[in-house]
Image (cartoon, rainbow, N blue to C red; front, side):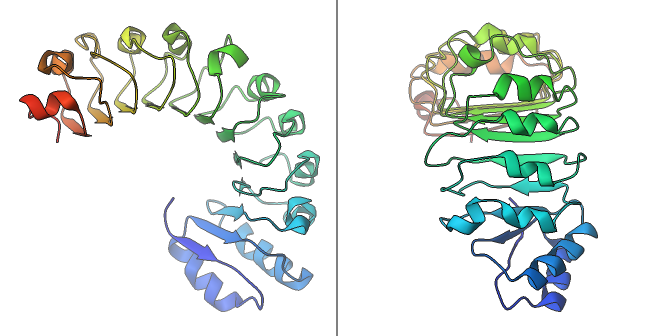
Length: 276
């Protein structure tokens, strides 16, 4: 997340307009008067690349009724809106929404209403399973997908996203790493604290992969990356099971690898200087 502008009442339109010049996110955690919602919506319509983030425990915000003032909104994050129970009010937005971030709630919600949006380019889902396959099927043009706290290959045995370039899996599970090969277009792949993932051979068969981030995995060695002709950068963090220097040597085989970063890797403390 880049620069964030926090909005509250009384709403200073001029100050917000200046802040939006270099902001990525505008966020609120308390309801605003109608006049302020209207003013904020007007500003965001002039800045379609800025995300509106709504968060917190307020019951009124959790109804999503405020969205009736934002029919032209293109980017919405409701990450951390804990009392949210129903996504049907999202349909108050128009059909050209391009980014949605549905964060964790007290009780998982049904994603079926979100499938009404069929032009999404970026999507982040945290722990919500119901309706996820239909949502992805309705948005074959997705470019970026982040899934948190989900057993991904159980919920999505097949994932057909022909334009997907970025995939981040965090705090869930992946029983069969071959599942990753159903997205050969990936340029960026992040695997962070993904349980049951013990072999990365499938990753070496992603022909477009340029950036790989591995974090907190129970891997004992890395495969030979000689076939990864597009790979430019690898980040390895919290890989405590890589205990032998040879466990990292497969990275050196990547023909175009230029950038490596890592910390708390047992093998790195035993004479593998390439990760820093």
